[in-house]
Amino acid sequence: MSLGVPFIGSNHLEGHLYASWLKESGEISGFGKPGFPLACLIASGGHTDLILMEGHGNYKLVGRTRDDAAGRLLTKLLGF
Image (cartoon, helix red, strand yellow):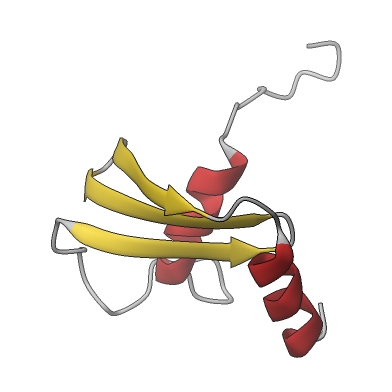
């Protein structure tokens, strides 16, 4: 790129999954490595998805709402 900065692509929803393991400093939390499989709930703004995480990069959508009401409610309750 013209700025000499590398471009790194990321998946927005995958970021929600991994955010649980981050500290404010950006380091990985002391919870240790995740034990797979994991059931993950993504409830934010426009997304309410239940994901089965069988490993890093290995996800299956188990269910989701037809609208964004659940995620929007959570966002409003938490004041984001």
